Image (cartoon, rainbow, N blue to C red; front, top):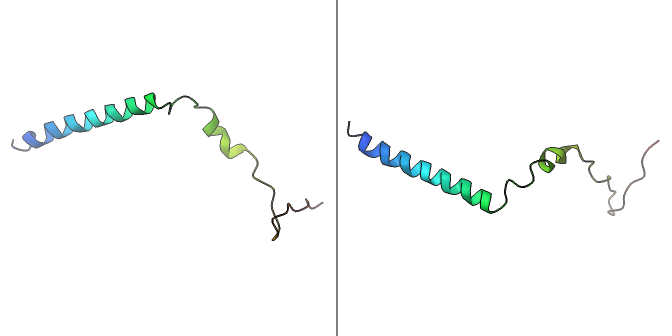
Length: 60
């Protein structure tokens, strides 16, 4: 029963922290662009480069 004296305030603090983190993220525009991150892995990578940093020719 004494554990409730610790767990109830701890859970309230955790919920309060989660609410503060959520509203901070909304306020700092973290949820504005939800489409671009899922497309980033599909974009082509940069062309391979040689030792001098010049782009290499594609092989036929």
